[in-house]
Each structure stands twice: as C-alpha cells, then as structure tokens.
Length: 269
Image 1: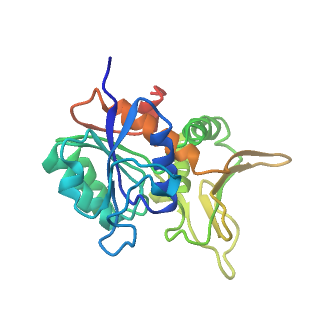
Image 2: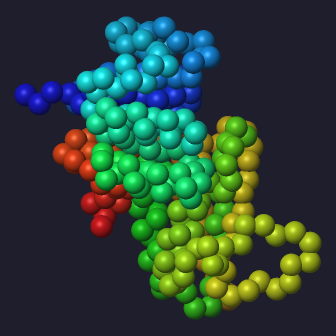
C-alpha cells in the first residue's frame, strides 16, 4: 500500500487555505502534515481541522522549519514575500513546492526558477483544470485569428484581490501573444484613458474589474469585422483551484527537481 502524500498548507486560515484543507481531508491519497500561517494569526496553536469540526492532530504554526520536517510538499497560495520565505525553507528541507501565488516580480520569478534546480516546483497562476485548457484554446484561437482580429483580455475578481491584472489574465495574454508570434511585453496595453487614438493592430488589451465576492472570471475576446469570438472561464468555487493544486502536488511526488506548470501536470505538452 502506498503511503499518503504528506502535505503542508501555507496560509491555512485564508480563503484558499480553507479550500485546500477541505480538499486534503477529503482525499485518501493525502494527509495533512503541517499548517502554516502568519505569526500574528489568531488561529495559531489551534487544530487545523477545528473549523471543519474535526481533529487533524496538526496545530497551526508560524514555524516553517518545524512544519516542513518530514513533509513531502508545501502548497502555497499566499503573497509573494511570504512565498519567497517558504521557497527558501523548502530548499533547505528538500521539500517540493506548489506555488499558486500571483503578483511576483521578475526577480522573484527568477528566484523560483533557480530554486527549481534543487527541488521540484509546480508554479502556475491558476491551478484550475478548466483554465489550463482555456490557455491552450486561447493560443490555438490566436494562431488562427491573428489577421484582422483584435484581442482583449477581461478579468474580474473579488474586492480583496491585491494584484492587477490577475496572474491568470497575464498568462492568457502570454498564450495569445505566442499564438500571434509576439512577446506579451511588446504588445500589451494595460490602461486606456483620455484620447487614446485608434486601436493599433497587433496589440493585446487588458481590462480589470474588482468587486464583491467574485472568485474569478476570465474572458479572451477576438473581435473581427462582423463577428466576435469569446472564450470564457468562470470559477464559482475555490475548490476548483484546490483540487488542481493537490493534483499538482501528486504530480511532484515522482520528480527530483525542475519547474513545471499545470500544462505539464495535465499532460498537455
């Protein structure tokens, strides 16, 4: 019998942390090994399963080293600064890492890539299986519709999201740019205000909406003359991201090092 994968959840008291814990408890192939949160979090010292009316035997802690001792993988959906701290700790403990955090700087992304030479990492702005498929579809559509169609990426998230555009929107923009043979940094338009002039061909526009409790909506539009093609994904529950992230954790069980994304996890490349 194969032993369950020992999982540590970072930011366990947050919205995504809650969804991840619930998914771990429901999966017989996984076992909660550690639960991390900030040093000022009121849940510190309490059982991580308490909010689900169960005893997990795992106390919420801010001691990263202790939580990682004997673990197989850390799943992180926090903030870039915290993720960098967890990244260093995972390298020292030789623990795999699934990173769903967004908003990283170029330097931080480089640090993740460098760390992947020592430990296996799945790094993706969106762990949803549906969004992973969406990325593939967008690149294919852009390749076919590159002449005479304007590309716009529209995303909406809850009022608490701190980065914009979302990491998923940027990844969709990258897929579209690749489809038309460009680099996103050379063709992205992130803001429009005032007299902007006519839309320039070959550019990819972004629109960011924030409000309420929207989990995550993404649409890529290909606007041509006489028709418009729209490819949309709407997440109604964070469970979809949690399920994908834990699928990624299982994928890493057989890896020694390397940086992967959900395309790799799902065998799409």
